[in-house]
Length: 169
Length: 169
DNA sequence: CTGCGATAGTTTCCGTGGAAAATAACTTAG
DNA sequence: CTAAGTTATTTTCCACGGAAACTATCGCAG
Image (cartoon, rainbow over all chains, first blue to last red; front, side, top):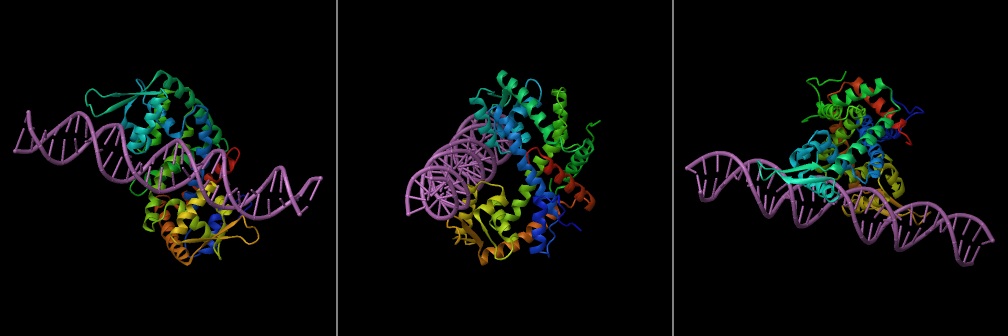
């Protein structure tokens, strides 16, 4: 079965420890879930290095990228931003506050519904995100350089399937 | 190529948006990295539901689980805990503070080196983590229920390979 | 029209973790 | 043996985001 080959990683060692201490439990799910967790942190750290070059935090980049992806005129409501960034409405407000202070986005009240705020990229914001996204995607490509094209496709498919199959997705 | 089949997920839609807005960039890495990120949050939320039942935060559980995995007498130094939990030493101090207040771990000074602190599970801590880990692993298994055994193994292997191949791992 | 319940954002308060300064204890050159 | 440098942990200060209360506005029943 799964032993400790010379290419064991930290997660293999964790699973081995559990197997020794709690042989009554099935610790194999850790192979997948533990690795997703660890990879998330490792990747995040490396992605943040690029954001730093543009004086952006992860959260700010998410907002800018969402606006840019939406296409001209690069505007979304706060609610739409909340949906695309998976954070609470309070967090969106604060991220937009910071970006507004930095002059990268602007806020205006929606005309049809005065409750809604429309957040849009400024010229500077647009220029910055266009540059940052290029650097970001290039960075992501280098992070995946260790996998073949086929492996990336297989990995992406399995991750998509896992995501869609989560209880209560 | 990659189109928008009926089973497209949020990440597929993000990639499609980038492709439309910035066809000059290769956005395919998002298929892997974006999904790892999204899955991390989705999984974390579901794992936290179990921790909540034991009045534990993610961080506290990490500490307890590390101590339990280490085997009898369930003791590690603060530095060892830092290594196994991937957080800063300051965060370890605070997590241990909370657990100590809850009576789940105890701290003592190492005899050979008075700078080192040895953190150990109390009887209550040991009992709690043994129960919580069983629930946690069972929970993880249900989260992976949508994948076959083979798919899980393939996914684990690809994630291991990706982790080991990260630049400067 | 006039409330009253829903909806969109914002504000407030709090918990968690990072970075770096501070503390304590070990080690070693001289 | 002692001062200077190192190492282990803690402390302090701060940034970020969540939860829930709050504000403003909308839309509808009567």
